[in-house]
Amino acid sequence: MSRIVLYFPKQANPAHGVEAGRDLLPLSLLTIAGLPVREGYDVVLIDGNLYDDAEAERRVLEACDDAFLYGTTGILGYQVTDACRMTRAVHGKHPKLTKVIGGWFASCAPELQLATGMYDAVCLGQGELTFLDLVHAVEAGEPLESVAGLALLRDGEVVHTDHRAVVGWNQLVDCPWELIDIAPYRDAQLGGLKRRQVERMPTPHGFETTPFFTISYYGSFGCPEHCDFCCSPMVSDLRWKAMPSGRMLDDLCQLKERWGFDAVRFYDANFGVGERRVKEFAEGLVERDLGIHWYPLMQAHSVCSYAPETLDLMVASGLYVMNIGAETGDEERMRAIGKHKELDENLRAAVRMDERQVRTWMTHIIGFPGESAESMLRTIDACRAIAASCETARPTVWPFRPIPGSALYAKALELGFRPPDRLEEWGLLEDYHLQESWEGNIPLEVNRAKRLFEHFSTLKFGVVRDEYGWWERRAAARLRSGDFGGAQLEAKAFDVYHRLTRRFTTRRPGHVVKPLPKPRPVGKLASTRSR
Image 1: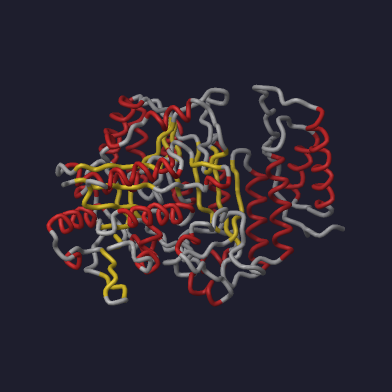
Image 2: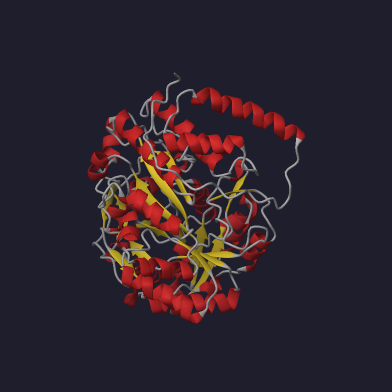
């Protein structure tokens, strides 16, 4: 009996009428499956995102009939709830089957997983070598205390086995892509959207009216940034290990030949740490004429420090959109959260990408524990300045979310954050970019400024309507001047106008929004109160 069953939980709550984008492959479980597959183990990987709850459960329970090990994972979000649901079903039918969980959230809060009584162990941090040693120990009937990198429950207390250091790609193998049938992922994308999707992949150039096929991929682990709001410093120990560019190119070329995808979404926590590696990767894409579009997450400091030739090469190789963690527009807050960059680098990075017509999603956070209203308003104003200056940048403002394992988690508890009582409830804390962590953390005047910024920026970028008219020009002028006086009444007037006109007009298929006007010099945000 050499079967291992791995379950990849749903990433979106089906009760909300949404589903995960079909480009999101079960990468976290594919990576830990690589070494056992190489040694000849029968690994069955079931992606819950492809099935309704009943069908996913049927497949998992059936596979577990002949298994000696069950494993699952999850990041903070609905995956926590779905992993718990599925493991409870497995535990009910196979109580003696060894069950483990890993991933970011479990690594940050192993006590929550072990307290359920369903899991025999939690794999902490980078899981590939830990999981292989766990497989060997379970199969041989050896005590799990002999495996480094685990959290166990012993006599009611959580104990940790020996620490396991982060390793480089010379000790890791490529993902066993043969474990997944790509057809459901590809067919769902090429068949068009049937439900509202979370983390929908941005449309590459040339596919505005044509379906496209995307895969997700990752070629590095960890991040060297010491961000106090993030759990990565604890989970990855501030280490960053990356797959050599040549090996990554070889793997993607083979996948391109096998699957014929159009775009790649990189799920690296920090794709651009090394300019030389990124440049080699871009050069390889051009030389091999791979013909793909790609989308990484990078830091503003990297964009600002890269040579212009490197950025040009990235664009020539297919870079078309980038996600940048801008974090804050307040200098004191930037230092407080441990971000290693200058404040103006967010705007400079947006401008550099805008000059190359690369779309840039820039996430900002307000409501850090102890943050003043003035600091939050400076962040919103920084977003306004970026939106006014760059036609391709999309700055957003999200409320702070306390994450177990982060340096700011304890401070959030002191100031009023109340975490869920049960493990499943952690997975119901969705829409973190919309919901405040605790009542009163973000002042009313800040929320008002945030809503007005979001209203005018979405209008200015043509997100609301399929035309560029008076309202869009007015929104662009508001963003340029920073004068939001009387803006609430204007926003309400637009809402009424838009609802009325939608009743009597029909959207024209294939209509293209007119190019937005060139940005003008940026002013400063005026008061958000009506004059």
